[in-house]
Amino acid sequence: MNDGRKDERGAQFPEPCFWETGLVVLVLLVGVAAWQAVPAAADHRGHDEPEDVHQETVGPGVSVPGTVFRVFRAKPSGSADPGGPDPLTIEEAFRTVVDALTLMSQHRTDFPRFDEAMKKEALQAVIVEPKVVNRDGKEFQLLVARTKERGKVKLLVSAVGLKERELIDRPERLAPLLDREFQWVVSKADTAPKPQARVTERDLRHAPILADQDVSALSAEARARTLQQLFGTYLHTLDELKSLDGQPYYEIGSSVLIPPARPDSTTNLYDIRVRQALERIVREPVFLEQMPNAVRSLLNGKIWNVAFVKIDGRDWATRTRVLPDDRSILVGERERRIQPAQILVNAYRKATPDDPFYSRTNDLPMGALPPEQLAFVIALEIQHNIVEKSMSGHVAQDALTAPK
Image 1 (cartoon, rainbow, N blue to C red):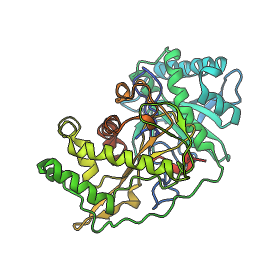
Image 2 (cartoon, rainbow, N blue to C red):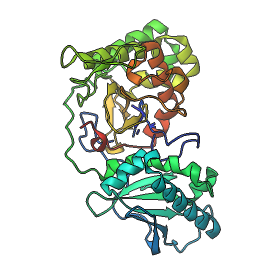
Image 3 (cartoon, rainbow, N blue to C red):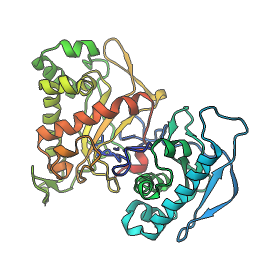
């Protein structure tokens, strides 16, 4: 929604003004195994890694008072990396991580995601590496990786990342960022059975997706007509895991939850709000002028699901998710190959101060926003994150964060 997201939002540090996107989002607008109907267990490429692909550790590590895990230094690779940090930077980063985790352990009530991970004993180790690079060669500041031990993960921290964000010797600034990353620690370590997505059909062959240059050339009315055609063939606006069925809803502008009249009342209500918001995005000139990527992405097939959802434990506002490369699809008469993404709006969460749309939400839950505000939330999330998270192959593992 934010799973950032920021959700999602995921492994990279946001600006140090709040917690990792979270994503966040919700919206955000993630990166998580298959809110989509096609993959029920997608790879979490970009944020998650296979077992034991990273460097070995050296020494006994350092324990953090009040916890069961230890902090380690990664074993040097043996070959000098021209872009890597010097030994002093690595040592300073290591000390900063230990100090930040000690601060979090001493004030666990201030760091709820860290506290949850500690209660579940989900973290096996924290490893400070010169650089953290995933299997696709993409560099991250933070990365959560599974281990061979069921229900345990390790948290990898980049010394270069800490230096670039000016977090060396600033444990008080690092702590909230680490806390946000601990939501991934919890979700990756979760081995409970996950709900399966409903099978939803799409008419991929006849989906009227547009080339980017054609989107700008169309009138507002023509873009709106294309969107309506996409609703019937390609673009879905319902949560395929039915997480809102039977849940309460918000009236626009109110933070008071209202029980649904029927099991599907909330689902249908938010379906309408999402469609109204999307029509504003493709129709109103301000979006094409200021957020053109949002308009193009809705009409060129990059996004195939925009929906309100209920995802407990996610404090990001929106989050984008995308199918892995080996599950890309062919869309339209010209059979354009696409890795489709989702925009998931976490109905019961509020935006956080570093979300680009924060000032437009008036501190309301996502589910209480009127369509005109919701349109900006969705558009800004797409504009800021859809290319980075989708085209780089960032895939959040939806099955691990699916609603319980």
